[in-house]
Image (tube, rainbow, N blue to C red; front, side):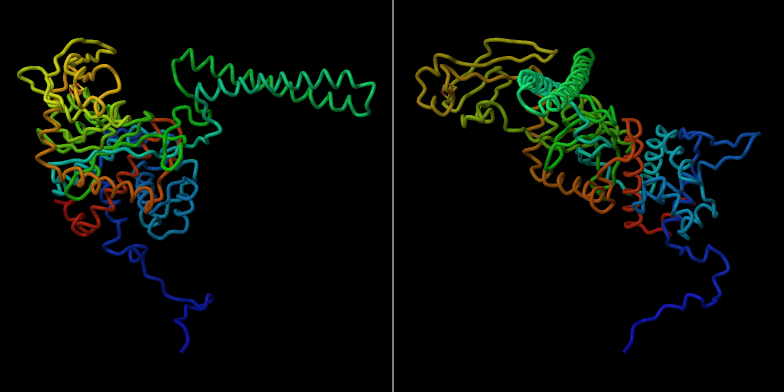
Amino acid sequence: MGYIEGLPRDQMQLLPASVDDYVSADNPARFIAAFVDELDLGELGFGRARPKATGRPGYDPADLLKLYLYGYLNRVRSSRCLAAEAGRNLEVMWLLGGLQPDFRTIADFRRVNVAAFKPLFRSFVLLCRRLDLFGRELVAVDGTRLEAVNSRRRNFTRQKLAGWITIADERIEEYLTRLDRADQAETEAEGASARAAVLTAKIARMRERRLRHSAMLAELVASGESQKSLTDPDARGMAMHPKVGVGYNAQVAVDARHKLIVEQHVTNAGSDLGLLAQTAGAARELLGVERIAAVADKGYYKGEDIAACETVGVIPYVARPERGPAIDQGYFGKDAFAYDAAQDCYTCPARKRLDPFSRSEKDGHCTIRYGNRQACRACPLKPQCTSGTARTINRWEGEAVLDRMAERLATRPDILDRRREMVEHPFGSIKQWMNQGAFLMRGLGSVNAELSLTALAYNLRRAITILGIPAMLQAMQA
Ligand code: SF4
């Protein structure tokens, strides 16, 4: 038995009469075409949405947008690769009517329209809402670090620069000592002048580098920034599993029903603290509900942000992180101390009452300290409680909001496990399946545009899996 055989390359054959015959009824390209044709690109912020009355005609932004959507959906993101697809891929030929824009035109379209991709992403979210793909009761908020176009070698922190300046000073000192020795030995040994020339060159190079690093450090101090990236000035060094890298922090809010992304944005903040109300609040608005529950991991546990959630119609669920010097040293955690709001006091594990005794304020954050020196002095539990003379408990002035959240969490303990399932799906898909764990563009505005396209492609793929292309096309026409 032989193998299945292909056609001889020189054989003539009858091709289908039109390119349309190559694109099946359930091909995603058909939905992309219908979706983009329905959009008002001018209203979304795309340039040249109306053709110019005079001059050489340009490409229709709708065609270039179709190309990008098709590319992001099929793991093709670079302008050169998209240009190549336009010349060899029948689906793209169908989508663009045979147009073959060059890679510069394709790249320029994305670059000049960066601000329009977020409204575009939101248009698809609104379509999904019309298609009833959102549960609109619970969203999970999480962040992931995506690499920037900036190597670690071209990222400088104040600490790194100060360290290198010290090393440069030591090296220059060492080279100067060796140069002195070479000068003294010049008449005694052959080749000493050659060694001196090498050392002089090394000193000049080291001085030049030191000067560069000093200038960068002075710039950082003057601007108040903590680090500088040379290739992409907006990128920041941040913890990226399993190592530290240079990149951005991509935030998403995912709806619980089908794990569709409702809201996304990119920031260069190294941590997720303070980003919950902003992300979940925008998701609530897009979903068009008065109130929505939002679950996030311990990295989002910040009193002011949790309080802000309540003001933007978000009911937050964030587990209290076990951190602080008492936990690090193995003493009773704050959870072991019960707060009585009516009496404004804590009851400690030895059943003693701790009363407020001092108040301090820093950056608008007011902290009240509770304690009972007398009780601690004679307490048999003291070795498990503190190494000092007495144990104190700090309470943020607005901590009632955190207590309310802890009570809510106690009634829904499963919600934290649901969070993991909800956010792992989009992040896993984006990084592994879609191979989009790194940005191609530079600058905060541009990487935000890229994430909008990536999230839109992820949502599109999910919606296709759930509903199928014919049903989505039908819904578009309804
Ligand atoms: S050391 Fe003080 S705070 Fe700790 S259990 Fe004893 S009395 Fe309570």
